[in-house]
Amino acid sequence: GTGALIPPCDEFVTALTIVTPSENGVVKMTDATHGQLFRLARLGLGGLGILSEVTLKVVPAHRLVEQTSVLSRSEAKKQLPTLLKRHKHIRYMWIPYQDCVVVVTNDDENDLPLLGPGTEVSDGKGGRKKIVTAEDIKPTFSRDEQFAPLRDLLRKLLESKNDASLDDDMINGMGFGDLRDVILASGNMLDPDHVKRCNKAEHAFWAKAGGIELAPSDQKLQFDCGGQQWVYEVCFPSGTYGMPGTTSIDFMQDLLDEIESSGIPAPAPIEQRW
Image (cartoon, helix red, strand yellow):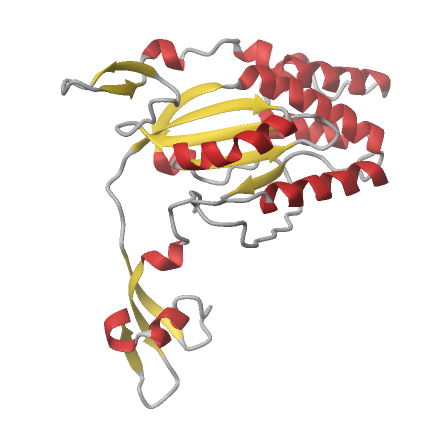
């Protein structure tokens, strides 16, 4: 999951049925009946037996308003405490070698922050609220304008190799993740200069791809990274909701400094969630 006030998914498990090799056989567990052992079993990865049944606490289906924007690294650091408190879900996507952080926020369409995306209207009770209109969702740039930096770079790379394997129809039919994959594969992926060109084109893409979308929550919160990736995940405490501190941003700054000072060919994005 993602969200400063939303616990990880194990906290939504309210009951378990475990098939064990012990004399107890099938064991039904809840926090009330087994306490700490139940809390351990939720994260036990089968170490206590085979999970045959899990009961989850769920929320009603709802739609989320997603806003995508681009900030500089200094702006992303400065705005993080405010964004964490303003929005239900937030993630940063850092682009190595570019002063660019792609910021994606999500909020329930019926509980939009007044300083967030959308159009402000009367709530019928003497106050104000935010709604999302068709005009809000209308993109500023066309799809062709958004994808132009990536498509142009791919064409240049193919032309430099006299590679005619992809025609315009095939290139124009590719999504963002596919384009990034093919661009990286069209050069030396261990060459920092080649990766920098790809990251620069990705920065230009996001600068025009920002805007507002409205969709069911399961579509907006899924991990759709696009393309092929080796993923290495790091998790650590970064303060509290009231005092988030700078630990998470300091980590990213140290990581990017090491990448860029050492000339590591690191494609984007480096994703960060709270």
